[in-house]
Structures are given as C-alpha cells and as structure tokens.
Length: 599
Ligand SMILES: Nc1ncnc2c1ncn2[C@@H]1O[C@H](COP(=O)(O)OP(=O)(O)OP(=O)(O)O)[C@@H](O)[C@H]1O
Image 1 (cartoon, rainbow, N blue to C red):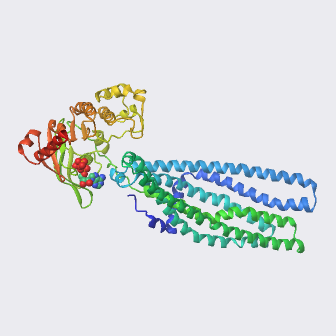
Image 2 (image 1 turned 45 degrees about the vertical axis):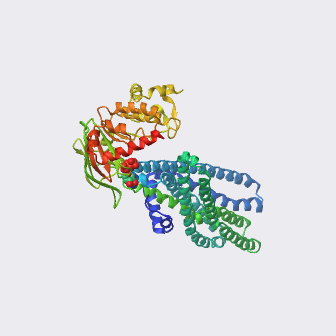
Image 3 (image 1 turned 180 degrees about the vertical axis):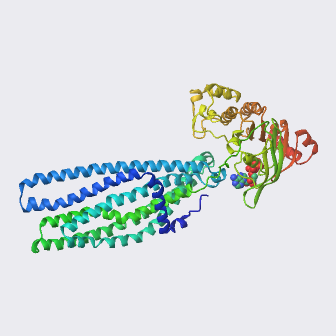
C-alpha cells in the first residue's frame, strides 16, 4: 500500500502540517510561476481598485445628481461608471486567464512529476498498491496543488484587496459608520473555524469511499467474464451500489458542513447592514450627513460582503484541497527505487549463461519463498523449471529480471551479478512470453513494435512471419493497422500469444523466459504457437516454466523446483531412470492425462 495515510491520519492533520503544505507549495509551484501569479495579482489589484472606485463614486452620484440636481454631472459620472466597469471587466478577464494558465501548467507539471516517480518504483510497489488508489492520488493530488495556490492567491489578491479598498472607502466616507459595518467580521471568522475539522473528517471518508468504488468497479470490469459466467452481477451490483449510496451521503454531509457558514454569514451581514442603515439613516435625517455618504458606505458594505464571505470560508475551502496536496506529496516523496548507482556498467551478454547460487528470497519478511535455490542454465540451451504449484518457478523469473531484490545468494548472467549491472541493460537482454499476454491498446503493429520501437516495417513483418502471425494479421480487414482492444480482447488466445512471440522475435534478446506459454490453447493454436516458440528458442538461453510433458521432454535440462529449492535436475531420460521427484511428478501428470483421455 501507499504510505498509510488512512482516514485517521488524514483527520488528525494539524495546522502545522497545513502550514508546511502551503509553504511547500509556495516554495515549489508558487515560486516557479511567480511571474504569472504576479501578473494575476496585478489584475486583481486593479479589480479591487475599480470596485472601490465604483463604491466611492456612488456617494458622488447621489450628492451631485440627486441632492444638488447638477445635470452636467450626469454625463461625467455615468461615463466614469462605464469606464471603471470596463477596466474592471478587462482585469477580471486578465486575472481569470492568467490564473487558469498557471494552474493548468501546475497540474500538468505535477502529473508528469508523479508519473516519473511512479515509473521509478519497483514491481513490488505496484503489486501492493491498487491502481484506483494510485490514479485518484495522481489526479486529485495534481489538481489540489493548483487549487490551493489559486485559492490563496485569489483570496489575497481579489478578495482581501477588495475588502481593504472598500473598507478604505467606508472610512473616508464615515469612519464611525465603517466601524459599525465591520464589527461583525471577527465573529464570522471565529464561527467558521469550528467547521473545518468536520469538513476534514467527511472529506477523508468521501475520498476513501470513492477509491473503493473505483477499485471495485475496475475489478468488476476486468473480471467481467468470470462475473458473468458465475452470474455474480447482482452481488457486484449490490456491493457497488452500497458504496455509491455511502458516497452520496458523505457528499451531502460535506455540502451541509461546507454550507453551514452560509446562514451565519448571511445573518451577520444582515446585522451589519441593518446597523449601518439605522445609524446612517438617523445621521442623514437628523445629524447633517449627506445621503451620498450613506449610499457610498452601504454600497461599499454590500460589495465587500461577497469577498468577505469568501475570505471567511477560505479555510474551509482550503481544507479538502490541502488534503489532496498531501496525497500528491506522499507520492512525490517516495524515493525512486529503481535507480542504478552512478557508473554501473551495462550487462555484456556473451552466451547468456544464467546462474542462481544459493538464492534466498521472500515477498514478505518471515515468509521465505526461495530457500537456497541454485541452478545453471547453459548458454543457448533450454532449461525447464517444473514442480508443484507455489514452489517458486515464477518467482525465479521475476528475480532474474530484478523485479525484486534477493535476500542472499547471487544471480549472475555470464559471470556478472545482476545487481552490478544496469537494470535497463539487464532487461534489454531478456525476452518474455507468458500465458496471459499483455497487449497495449493500439494497432497490431504498435504491439509488435513494442519489442523494439526503432524497428522498420520489414523487420516487424519478418518478426510476425517468424511468429506464425503474419497470415492471420493480413487476414484482418486493416491488417497490421487493426486495433487491438484494451487487453487485446478481439483476438483469440493463440493470436495474442503469437503477437507476443513476434514482439519477442523483434526484441531479439539473447535470453528468453517462457511462462507456460501454451497452457491455455486449443490443440490447433497450440501447434502454431509451439512451432513459433521452437524457432524463437533457437540459439537463445531459454528458461521455461513448463507444465506439459512435451516441453519438458525436449528440454536440455530440467530443474525440479519444490519449496523454493531445486531438488533434482538433469535430462528427461536421466530423471526418469533416477525414479526420484521428477519421476513421481511425471507419473502423476501422465496418469492425469490418461484419465482425461479415457474420460
Ligand atoms: N507478488 C507476490 N506477493 C506475495 N507472495 C507471492 C507473490 N507472488 C507469488 N507469491 C507467493 O510465492 C510463492 C511462490 O509463487 P510462484 O508463483 O513463484 O510459484 P510457482 O511455482 O510459479 O507456482 P505456479 O506453478 O502455480 O505458477 C507462492 O506461495 C505464492 O503465493
């Protein structure tokens, strides 16, 4: 799993962490885009200035036009109002576009950074983490970084500057009236604070439910054949429905919590305006004040109301985005695992001799899978790994590609320890064909070319021919341009495998790993695939996990892997004569086959 930022940890985030998150965002993304933010800030300043100017102008309009009945002022003042509004409109446009551009760049940059970080993780990380969780963090995190910065910048720029400007107008017009209007503000801020914890709690629950929904849906779609053949649709539906309902409730609770500041702010705003109306009305009627001052203060108060409300809510709105930003940092802070030490040499393959020497390994501590496994696969020869399920055969292949680090012992290719050469050169030296072929969504050509992206068209066709795949590919309407689905769903098992074999031909790696490559095929497909595989194996050091007798009989060497060790090895005839573990294993399989044939 990813770092254990469970619901609890999320909930318990303290404000120090919030401060850290914000300052880290400002020091990284904020600093990188300071020019864009400054420009946007300038636009916001102009907006705040024009808004305050309009409020101020209100007083002049009332006094000149309505009290003094000055008709020439009508033109000047209405012109000024139009001009100020125009400037305000253009600044609003400028700030929105600038801020959005910076924000989009931040999202894109962060997604690239997260992707790089993810690609540098080892296979174990991906085995432990669920795709849905990684994807949610990938998206939510990158967007949260933008949202936090934009929200703070907008609050400081547009809202705070507007409130300051409008307050200045109120003070200029009548300091006492301004005081009455502003007295309620601190109450609003304090009232809003108590909502923050609630919002954090609900958000973390909402986020985890959303991950569950995605996880279960992805699993349901990926396993749709199994689900349908076991008629499990109703169970799946009920389970996912239940989560969707839970998410709906959490979302509703979230909106209720977030909006609780609304009535409070409305009431306080109403009180402020009511007080000003009382004081100013009395002042205009009995205290010699002008109606212009009164209208100007009321306008400023009304205009400052929205930005003030947003400022008071800032903390609440920030809360969820800050949690998202933490998720981003969780991923970004993972040290890259697959990094070769500087100066690590590339693997030089001469014959491709593979040596496992006393290898110990477990996926989890205290659960050993390989317990002193040793064998040698001679260059250019085929070595078969056989043995009971769970004995560790697939693990041997994963370790040879260095998907996991061994605990002790050595694995070497042509005398070079695999830990002392670059991972890239190691993996480039190995071709792999397994029974569950992974095809990328794209064309047949793209999928074969994955073996060597620089390959020419002729080379791709030659590889397909060698893999006995050319004929069926050209039989498709679009030939090599035919699309294969997300998992190559439109192709038969045998066709998929032959594309994978073509890919391996194209890669032309000196070492070949075959994981039960023909186990799931009917006999016709199997014959085609088998022919292709024999050709592929020629002159390569081949390690094959074999369950079927045919592969084993022809192998140059057979290693019987049991409980994480090679307990017996030799050629088929030798091992049969020996009447040991292989013999028993062989007899069991043979008996099974006889039974199947007679059934
Ligand atoms: N990614 C993994 N995480 C944890 N344990 C694993 C993982 N992969 C395999 N194992 C465990 O390691 C042991 C050896 O598995 P492995 O797949 O290597 O056996 P195998 O001989 O290839 O079996 P089979 O013939 O059934 O494919 C098993 O107990 C298995 O449960």
